[in-house]
Image 1 (tube, rainbow, N blue to C red):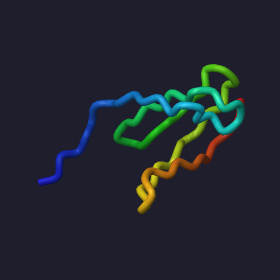
Image 2: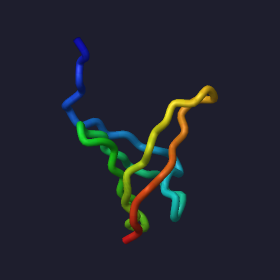
Image 3: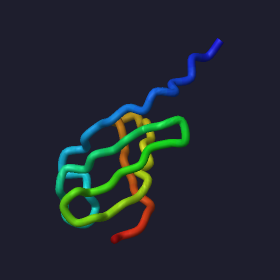
Image 4: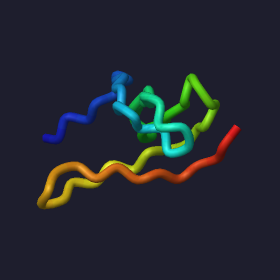
Length: 64
């Protein structure tokens, strides 16, 4: 049986905003991750991929 995480989790990606390089708070829910920069207003869905060198974070989204 696979345990599916239903409780939202909050993380901070240091210098993770693709627009202003501020720390990016990210909330991960059952529907996926969402990030909103508190400094410049960028919002989007960070994509986290496991690679042989570690985690790779890429972005799709809009700028406010």
